[in-house]
Image (tube, each protein chain N blue to C red):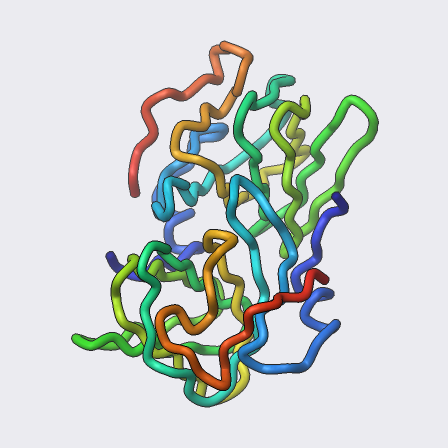
Length: 119
Length: 119
């Protein structure tokens, strides 16, 4: 593989809620995604999910609170925990999660992306 | 868990080649490590290893070339591939790898750290 420059990869797409695969290791994917506005409440039955903010600010609503993430901060959503990512303005996020993770987890939605592009 | 501010975590230790655990998900650890000077040639039999440079510059020597990583760039060393991290100046790195990964892989060394601290 080649090295990955995260900022450069983010210049390659402009869609929201549409994760791109930028790395694979140990059965996991590294994904980059641009988020804006509100997603859908969902959880992942079997997969923990890491959100690392590369640029901007992200709120992750949980049923019992909220997490605010700034650039350079990450949070791991344990499997089974319902969450709702919310981005008031555009935010760039790196995700670490198992290869079989679906972006909307248990919640089928128009935002569900089942075929991810590798960039 | 709480959110993790990567820069803040790096203020909590000053040792080199001494990875700290800052997150766990799906049988993998997120680790932070400060590197300076040269490590030891090694490989990991079963684990792919991701190096993401948070601050500074890192060279990863391979038997057939070199990778130069700047801030915001990552590289995944596939299992079985010999590598030698070299940091001319101090560099701050985020690692993502399976929980059982030993820092020196197959090469027992004075730099081997078998009990990692969680910070």
